[in-house]
Length: 545
Image (cartoon, rainbow, N blue to C red):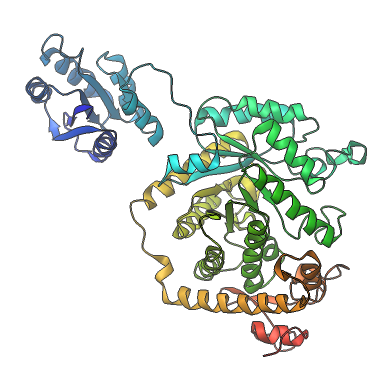
């Protein structure tokens, strides 16, 4: 036990919620706590302090600050001489009130509402002394454990110049707004970092920060060694993935890898790798990270949804992504769930799709394969109007919290118009913090909704049907789901297909979908009605009962 902590609101203030929350945190840090009540006079507070001799006294005041100087002066006068030496006083209120309290000389610390829970707990854990601040955990798994039940906050960041990115990264770290800063390189860097002569100079800074030297990554890393010391990670290159892996681990201690299974190939045009080569290299880099104990995310399933694939294909690919990571030896797997994709999907159907993915992925979990859930909003779901986008971002966050994520990937409210600046990253993360803090008090169980449960079960059944059809493509393969040749054949024959792949010489590109009743479904081109997954597969000669 660290001793006794008393709390009271002073003067005419009846706002006790913040004070009671502070006392709960104090109790969690080992204090015995007593709430004295609201609207206590300075003389009453002083008398209780003299009688109970607490180690910590928390004073709350959220009214306008004009009356506060006289109240605090009266309290100081009423306290017995020397009492404030062993007893520490803290204050909580609005920023103007906190400034008045700080000038009184009575308080060891004032809180104005903008502090994170970690800052308050650091104060309580350290007793207010000026001892060196404990460095937050610097690996993903340890930081998840340290922050639980609050999920880690992640945001991507990459400005058109390295200099602006370095300055912004430091600003974000100092604000303590997030736990994970994801560096977003421009497309030139992602595809041509190790081949600078192939870069298009007209595209410098397009889509992210124009990383051109290892020193650029080192500079960003050094800029974030302050504030709450966020973890760093970097998008995978779309080419030379193993060289990117080696460099990102060496320069920024990459918190976890994000690698596709089929993408960053001629399938999406983001590199010139043929599909079987891309799959083989992607899995090889998963294994490279796994050998070094680095967690891996397979950035796969939502790419199919972004190209209009039916929900059943997205669910099956979520499973295959995790399956191949496990086969590559990954022990800590980050399963990303991108909501709001494709445009038009409703929250109920969206949640059902994610729960179906989660059910199949969780079937792979065992003592050697731990799954961490990461949720995010879809980029295309955000309006270019900032206030509307803030509401959309918050609403998506509430739904996604039904998955009880370990990582909350914030997509900044500005992204419908432009890539987020450092202040916009901070503001977006603070909005997310508010959503999460409120949700942790207890949300209804959205997953228990009968419509959600029915759709989840249907998608699990459809995905199993598709997975079995893929397995049958490789009767001579020892492991068809992890066979690059079989997976390539699944794309070529249309088992894995999407409307946006039309005219792509490396895919079938004949699938038609539409959002019907809030879900993305395969439709018959002639009738506009839904095709079930077995019906779709039979039409392309890939399924027999």
